[in-house]
Length: 247
Ligand SMILES: [Zn+2]
Image (cartoon, rainbow, N blue to C red; front, side, top):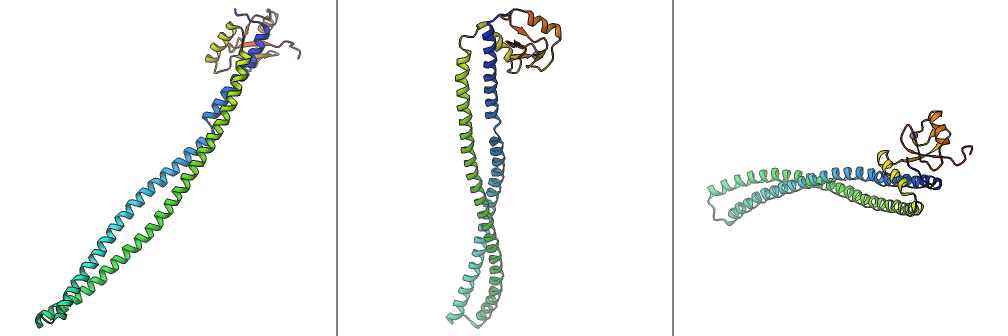
């Protein structure tokens, strides 16, 4: 049977309130809504990053395709220029001139077709560059948002930590010199009962488990010496009797 001075029992209630407050602050810290926002933002950012990489790769492919198309046009053009130069030189035979002239006609048609391909690829490159620029600015905006959110979260967590430090200081003062056996029991019960180890007995109700105790148990507690540490029959918590039950 644990006994502890009545004042210590009441002071333990205050310590409990501060420990509960600390637990709430720790919970707020872990479950801060900005964390969920940051995770959601990061998921969006990951999507945009992926789309950005895909778009950049596709643009690279298109640019290679464009270079190839330009090269094709250039080849035909220089072949035509060579043919033209031979014709203009006057050194080709009549037969050669006929052959060259027919090849030149073919080359002109081929060049036109290739230039059409080149133009079409060029348009696709431009459209893709626009899309990539939009993705880049969307990504940059999300990155900026993420940085702002991280700074906000850091500030909010620092405020919570500051509150927690103040509560810790208060708690240390209130707990100073408390009956050692009472503190041991309190610490053990806190571990077992989800942090709430001591509660007030209000009327016949344990404020720890909110259950109404049977009248004979309450009568026994009321009759016991006030130094005797009472326990709830239902939840096992330390029950502190009100100094003046009528209050
Ligand atoms: Zn209880």
